[in-house]
Image (tube, rainbow, N blue to C red; front, side, top):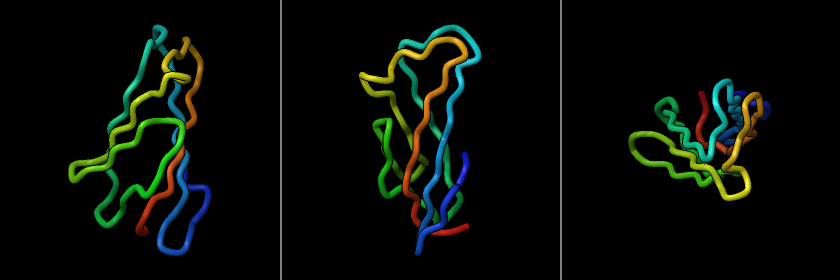
Length: 81
């Protein structure tokens, strides 16, 4: 997770998933943010934010990821930290 830009009341973050194993036919990512932070909007995945964390699922156009390939995701976060 990289936070390349700070915004008033939030930040922009980039997430890079790298497939180091067998090819993926789909993917899902679960992660938690520190207290006081959240997700306002995201791209390159189906984003769902809840009380227990954030889940991002692949979309039809980025489901398949070959060995050594990367998936680039990003989101606008709320809060600071």
